[in-house]
Image (tube, rainbow, N blue to C red; front, side, top):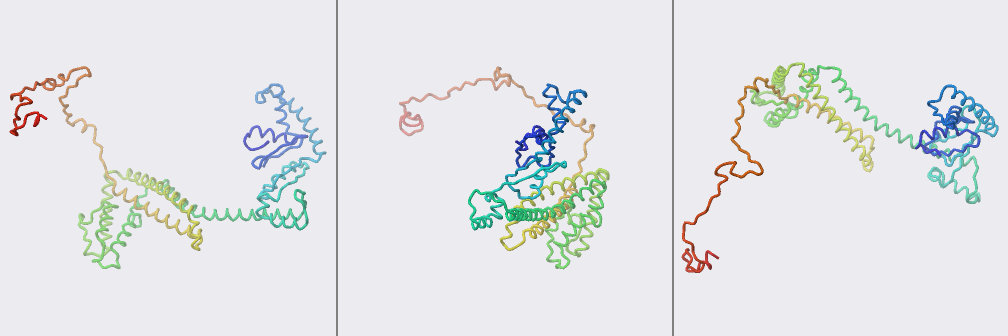
Amino acid sequence: MLNAKYHAQEAEIVAQAGRKGAITIATNMAGRGTDILLGGNIEFMAREYLKEDEIDPDEATEEQMKEKMARAKRVVESEHKEVVAAGGLYIIGTERHESRRIDNQLRGRAGRQGDPGASRFFLSLEDDLMRIFAGDKVKALMQRLGMDEGVAIESKMVSKRIEAAQKSVEARNFEQRKHLLQYDDVMNRQRATIYGLRRQLMEIPDQREYLLGEKGVARDLLGDFTKKYLGADVAPEDWDIDNYNIQLQSVFDFDAEGEGIDLTNANSDEIEANVWEKLKIHYAAKESEVGAEAMRTYERIIMLNIIDAQWKDHLLSIDHLKQGIGLVGYGQKDPLVEYKKQSFDMFQEMLDRIDTITIRTLFNLQVVAEQPPEALQRRPPRRAAQLRFTGPNQTAAAAGEDAGKVRTVRRTEAKVGRNELCTCGSGKKYKKCCGA
């Protein structure tokens, strides 16, 4: 029995499946893609002979192996002639598969190595393939012909109907794979863009021009802010200067008013040019503190980390989009077209986030100078507090003189009896008033 679970044992079964009188049962998962030699396999048979003599095949000597190989060869040649004379390997199939390729693979077991063989398939009109694609027509035809239930049907017409059903299934599966490939092609193009950017960062150490050049990421981002909040086609009194300052402070760590840039009495192009010059000076000062080589390393590491994090989030979002995009079909829209549109918009947003987060991280990078060991040694030692600790069995007096003393409370006034008048002046007895 072959079921693709015990590979080592099944290899031996398949090797000897062509011997005279051998019957091998295989599931759909096993037995495909292997050659069955009529008469058996010489090498496997020789190893079996060694095991019968209690000899490990892997430790057998060359003479022992040659002896068993010669014996196995004589047996295989003899049985090969008998099996060929009997008609060769006979294949019996209990159903027809959805793909004709699988049926042909099964038939091919009977005709390998130039040996003769035959194949025969048994199937029912209640099989999935016949029931879905050809069951009703064939059943109606059998009823018109007066065929009884359980009678074998052998007809070219039935075979043609089965082949037509297989073609229908193959066409459907092909369309599904083609449709899936169209979805995957969208991700492949986006993946090529991201991997190209990562490869550029890995192969080119200096990315300063890409980040801070005149056509770099930082300049484009500043231009987007200026166009959004200080539009050239908008009157200066309608500019959103507050949000413009907020974006400059958040992304570039830059205070325009503190740097003396007038945002009200100049046009948007002049403001952008002035801000850009100041930003280059600030970044150059930060680079001089860190060092040019170290700054290039920081730029690459920061960009790589941000790209990887954003790409992982984008893949998760695309998976969610793919799961629910089929619902747009209810709105008379093509899911594939909508998927391409939305995935492109999401990819563009991801690229914008990568640029924004990268520039924000670099411009907000704080340079921390490490103190030399001499400076740490010059620090005055911290004065220890005057504390005394007591053991678990010691008295409290050991922690302090006053803490361990027991104070006696002494009465300074005469004691008031229970039946005497209360001292509060109420006229009642003490036990009925304050002493209650």
